[in-house]
Length: 284
Ligand SMILES: Nc1ncnc2c1ncn2[C@@H]1O[C@H](COP(=O)(O)OP(=O)(O)OP(=O)(O)O)[C@@H](O)[C@H]1O
Image (cartoon, rainbow, N blue to C red; front, side, top):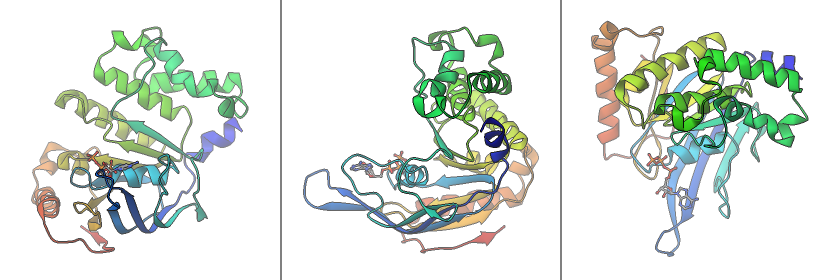
């Protein structure tokens, strides 16, 4: 299983949201609120896909759906279909792992123990041998630059280092789908840039499908192979385009006419009041 899981990272992957509608109970207790309104997204190859949209438009809701994570007591999606590798996704699945802004490291465990934590769970213990788990933890700690901190506690680390721990805990599972919910949103500008660089390095070494939620247009242009912009609530697709510029993307490219046009295009959509289109795909 270990070797299979290692090579799985480079294997094809597909995630499809088909005509997704999501409604949640209204906060005032009266009826429901439609948060997502007919979103269709097809992701069919490894790459970094940026999901942008105004606050509260349903980005996390869509991201969770891709990982089969469901809120308690709410039908998700209200209608539409989530398919992973062409199969209906009805529950959390091993192919997808999530990284959150609140890195959720256990304060009583060392860096190494935090990263190895998934292997304490019966589900993974029965699938990954202890030797394979140790090898993966060692490799991943080196990949995220935390080898020298393995015996430290989270309280002894900076915010960026703590986010590295959270990223490493996701990467030890060698996911084919890495779902990142504003993972660098709480970091200062320099640390955020370092983490973006790290993500690109890790991605280049082991390409998988990364779906990355952000509010930050520059982050989208720095990282994305594809940028999907959602409208304000209820979310529809407002824009969807590819960025062909290879990574790492230089400051010169960031200031180029091409990049500035993309930035303006995203900002125009984020500030637009008009409803989005059901599905639109453009190559830039
Ligand atoms: N389980 C739930 N029950 C009720 N309402 C919910 C639930 N989950 C999310 N919501 C509501 O749905 C809306 C969209 O939430 P979601 O977190 O998906 O948006 P978002 O775009 O990720 O937001 P942000 O950018 O602020 O992180 C919000 O108004 C939120 O309060």
